[in-house]
Amino acid sequence: MDLVIRDARVIDGTGGASYRADVGVHEGRITTIHREGDAGPRPTGTRTVEAHGLSLAPGFIDMHAHSDLALLRDPDHSAKAAQGVTLEVIGQDGLSYAPVDDRTLAQVRQAITGWNGDGSDIDFDWRTVGEYLDRLDRQGIAVNAAYLIPQGTVRMYAVGWDDRPATHAEVERMKQLVAEGMEQGAVGMSSGLTYTPGMYADDSELTELCKVVAQFNGYYCPHHRSYGAGALQAYEEMVNLTRTANCPLHLAHATMNFGVNKGKAPDLLALLDSALANGADITLDTYPYTPGCTTLVAMLPSWASEGGPDSILARLLDDATAEKIRHHMEVIGADGCHGVPIEWDRIEISGVSNPDLTSFVGKTVAESAAERGEEPWVTARRLLVDDKLGSTILQHVGHEENVQAIMRHPVHTGGSDGILQGFKPHPRAYGTFPQYLGRYVRELGVLTLEECVAHLTGRPAARLRLPDRGIVREGYRADLVLFAPETVAAGSTFDAPRTLPTGIPHVLIDGKFVMEDGRRTDVLAGRSVRRTA
Image (cartoon, rainbow, N blue to C red):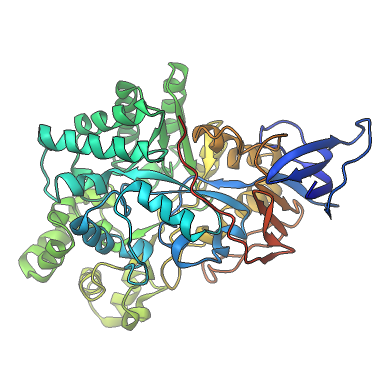
């Protein structure tokens, strides 16, 4: 064999009890698992790694990633490789870079600059989903990637940025785009229903698109219409919609945030348990932190975003319209802020596109406003305009008891929702998976190690319908991670968010070391992982 991992504690991704074994790898596959006490000789290989004190698990699957351009921009990509991530699901929250035409590409690049940068360093030599996946394969990437068709981008392509129902012809065009993307290898469709223009779609339109996704055995992954004042209703809407479409549902970053939802995770879980008992196919992902992360422009009311980025900037520059925006955000509660009046002392600027604005980073909008002797909206408005909508934020609105309750649920999986842009990104981008293993398993005991690994490996692989990943089993791909349960920890913090984790010395993709002895190798073993029939 090419490699033997000797005397590892195998945590196989099924949730079952761990065991000690030698694991042999040949030509990118797990070929032998020789358990302690098995008869016969132990396997030998060209290379042996002694795993004393280490646990061997399937590679972690990040069910909610924003590495759409980072995979192309940064061959190292230690942000994910060092965590033990061997597969990311990208194309999230209804906004990404395929399928597009020239007009749509320019608009989406501007709309999500805060997530991925403006892309000025990227050669956008694709337009379709298949061409984007081909580009990942042709260039070579650090970790594997699966893609969700972004519903907001599809609507931008077929309808534009208008807040109106789509015509029959436009719905048919969107269905065609979704079908083409699924045929080309996408694993499902995402939405960002607090982001424009995707949020302008009504349930009937979304249902028609989900029916297409279901025909290809994909799943629907919505960032639904509210995580705040209308959270439970928004979750119920997605459950009912996908039941009507007969489409599997995966709830993105499934949290219960803001003061109105403190302690209400049991209400969400009761809703899901009832649907599951009635035959619904539902999974969800979360990140193991309380603050959220998005863009500052996402906080605006949807009517202020109609027409796209240029229209938003024009409204912000008009004093009367800007005052109307402020009133909706601070008094009424904008739909962009989940129907809750914005609390500027909880909105921390985490990144800016304009380097002249770095003095705002690491401070709340309220703090920066106080320094300038002005109202917070004046500061926020200036920042939106001067940064051309490119600012990212941390939103400190979560509740620890909700985070822990949801991660215990049997349909839970792990997702970082990691935005890699900005001077001070959310530490979840670099720390989600060791945070689960270190803090929530070893320190707090919220999950057992076997349960947690299943949440991060076997369960997401089943949602993605991957027949040979996510479990340590003979014949499966050798996407593997060796970690030390007693020391594994997230190095990233809110003060030092790009610090790499500790206690994860080895990570393999297709049997090749992408992390070796705690260091990133120069191997680009990642490829697109496409939906199969």
